[in-house]
Amino acid sequence: MRFRAKTSAASGPRPPAILYGAAALALLSLIWSGYAITDLMHSGWFGLSVAIAGDIGWITVLWAEYRGLTIQIKDKDYNAAPAGWAIALGVAALLALHGHDVGSTGQMYAGPFVVLVGKIVWTFALAALRDPAALTPEQEAEIASVIRDSEYEARLHAARLGQLDRAADSEIARIRAEARITLARDDADAEIRLERIDKIREIERRTPIAIESPLAREQSERDREQLAPPPNTPPPNMGRTSANSDRERPSLADTVRDRVAIFPDNGDALTAVLAVLPDANPKSAAAAIRRARNTLKGPYN
Image (cartoon, rainbow, N blue to C red; front, side):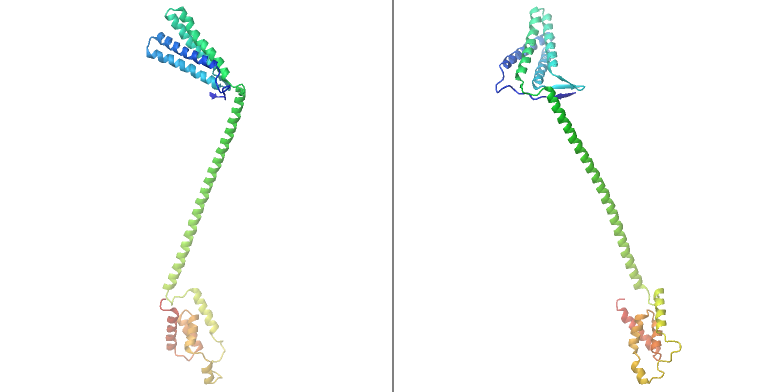
């Protein structure tokens, strides 16, 4: 059930003259029906409230007729005129019953006459108040249908857009969550790599010099093989004078410094030094190697 109103305007700046007569009849009808129904019920103020309720209903229906309100039931429109006549006939019946109750034939016929005349006059008054150029109820219904359909389409479109926005927000939230997980994984990997580098450096600092890694040992062996003289090579001082030999032979300090830089092991370095300087004192050469090693390591290593 839906109510529908149509636009209605007065025919001019001043109301028609029939409206004054209709208002006077309505006031007279209200007074007479209020008295008669209250006297009929013999219940004082309670009976008066029933009469006032009937009168308010009649006035309300008059207003609905003026505004062109309709009631839609099962896709069919019903105006307020039948309801107004139903209320008017009901009040007229109560007034006739009151005349019969008091035993007055005049009241039984004259009482309803006031209400029915008032209703008829108001029918003409409402017709005079309507604008002749106003749209018909069918046209108003068609316009209302178009407005209703357009409102439905607009709200449906807004609802779909809202649904898309919510889905987009959900997808963005999921992507951000996955990105945070990836970033946390990368941070953890970077921290582990840094810890491994620090640990390797710490192990290298704490590893004694005498402990060689396999790679360092292989490098030492390759260096010894490269520095060792061929098997059939004569001694370095053969065929040379001692003066030339002293002039061409490198010094012990230079030889020790070069061999310490090549060989991480002091024993290998000593062997390489003695291979170059076979007449050098082994103890002096070993002491020079230790000093060079300490100098190479520095005071904080």
